[in-house]
Image (cartoon, rainbow, N blue to C red; front, side, top):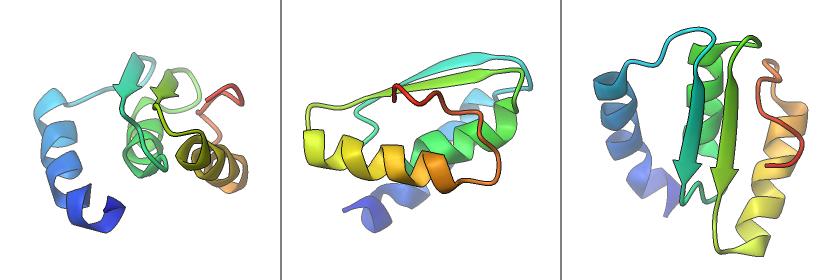
Length: 77
């Protein structure tokens, strides 16, 4: 599902045009792929908070955030 929705997420990110230092709330973040893309754009000065109803998906998102090269995501994702 993440792969199917990724192109849509990228279009939304381009439309929102987040910049360094911004704070973003990703509602329905799933496994965190869109959150990670947002994190690259807001940088370490910004913050991404991802929320999702699925605990297993949030677990994947936390793992991906921990190994991401740009650690803009908080560990409490």
